[in-house]
Length: 364
Ligand code: 5AD
Ligand code: SF4
Ligand code: FES
Image 1 (cartoon, protein in one colour):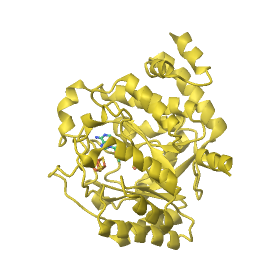
Image 2 (tube, rainbow, N blue to C red; image 1 turned 30 degrees about the vertical axis):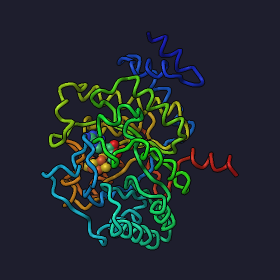
Image 3 (spheres, rainbow, N blue to C red; image 1 turned 90 degrees about the vertical axis):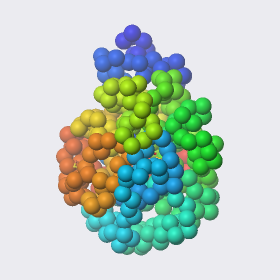
């Protein structure tokens, strides 16, 4: 079997059966995948890890994804919206501490007040930082016009996870209505590209009913859609969600963690010059989760800049780390962690997706 894994790793392009075999690799075999991924990372994107200071702007959400702790139907969540001034202060902190970029993330809403507020904040962050701070948005499905307005205000990257790329599985994790439509989500990814964003997507790993074949398809989806940045991590059950009832069917958490790590490493081998995030969900399972992800291919970390008093309310899943720490503690902690993983922080740099830049060059 080891031979098979090594043989597959020598291939130029992975087909679906190759991916399934790689995802099945055992403890001994997975080392070969990790070594190869680390070498490719070093060669194509280097040692630098870029910061995206994360501002969890609001947990108000109009949707009801069956896995998510802040779904509209969860009445146990106390809802909040961070004050505009606090967002601006967090962004200024990021800029002064040479973070390079911020991410504004929130539950999904499309009301005028929300759209206007985001536009205004993006504009203000751009202005206060002399356009030095990069801005990523992660605010769900929106109209082309909204995407365009936010882009023109100064955001240049957008994260929209497809969550599961298999359209037949999508309804297992989402209510069956127009608000939760696979095709609409896919259309949004295309709109984002059309408007000019660097486009990020990703999936959850270890969901109930999900097979290794499905995960192989997820990797192929990311390649086929030529995604510039990827954030993916283990599914972690949350008590106050409908999906919680399947908890006994899940892989043990550590298995979900290693499956996620293999996904990161394999994706790095497949898509050499993209940006890949070491996600917080990985650290929710393994205290060294993000460092391990950095070692095998991730080059983006999102230190949490949400004012501490709101953090307990942005619990998408259980055991989310960093809910008691403030921005300073997290960034100090992360720097030490990145050094431990043999990386260095790309302070003051945007660290844009090289993949995006390379595609742009080809188009010109
Ligand atoms: N476990 C892991 N990730 C989750 N997300 C939402 N709920 C969970 C969960 N229970 C992820 C989704 C979403 C991102 C913001 O958080 O992939 O896109
Ligand atoms: Fe809302 Fe996003 Fe959670 Fe779905 S995953 S319920 S859209 S915050
Ligand atoms: Fe938040 Fe370590 S990254 S405490």
